[in-house]
Length: 214
Image (tube, rainbow, N blue to C red; front, top):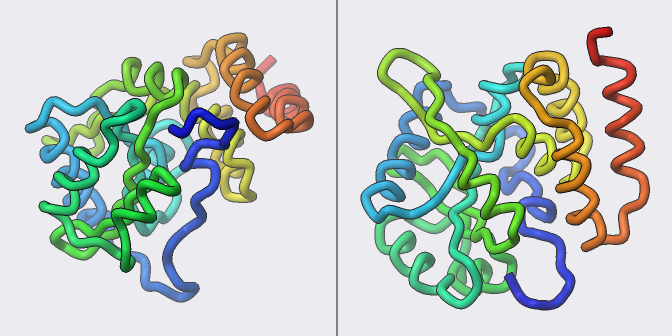
């Protein structure tokens, strides 16, 4: 992450698919996730899935077209990670290397064609999210390294897109009892300073008041 005050990549990236792109079968998505996971583990990289795949486990199931994950690179070593990933996966855009260095997200495709959004993590919160990730079973024999539900809420609230808030609602209902909400508020407060957001925490508290079980 550049040292200037800048929002993390996962808050700035929208879906990189054209409207009307067919939704792929869930088994192909899991195959793609397993492929990138095996690649990261074979290199002892620290990572976790943070997108729609993680929402499937901690929130309300929904269709998702890509596999999003954070690979913690820290600051200064990003190019090594980018080169290794580009050596194993096809890029989805021209000048993918330059785009990744500028925006801290590498846009790839798995061998089966499923899009992969690889965020290059560097913030203390991203370090914390990766460190607290766990392998969760989706179907028999398929376990994926997911961000915990509290961290996923932080990612989603900070990104602050309409689908993110729908995902947060589902996470509160399904997994809210697993979350340390004071920790979530503290993590969010630190991140929201990056973009001078003074409303997101209040919106989260309104959702919690409305959806939490008495």
